[in-house]
Image (tube, rainbow, N blue to C red; front, side):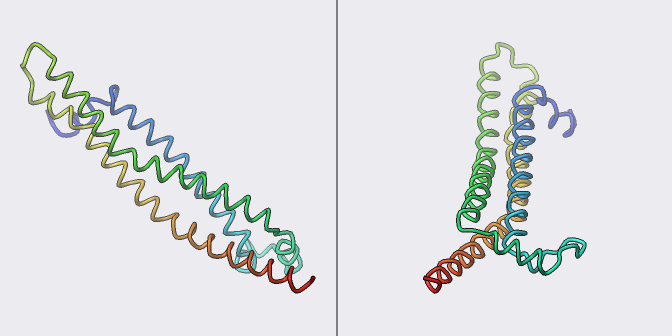
Length: 170
């Protein structure tokens, strides 16, 4: 068996579950990225002017509409989805190991030992895919985590300004 046929030989088995899990994780990542981007756009209205359609008055109005409650809601939503994404990524190596262990248990329980080498390599494909998807989504994490951190700093600074202006106005 060649490497490609070995890697995809268990696609209808446990490897298929890993692929479905990867699709779900990709969708969560996309939602987390969109949420982080939206939050960033709200926290940085002066630097975000798509197609330069926003006037200074519109940007000022957006800043005035930003309340502590609104910021906290956006922050909680973004952090919640991002936390789900990070935890899903951590599960991939575990899924790979689980698939390998299950395959090896089934291999050991089979009566005939013919083709044991091919079956052994097929058992390792779950670990392979678990590691591959873990790496892919760690790269995706590296693309989104700086924006999440920047959003946290911006939200904290914005809320500090709101609190200071509330104290001054009293």
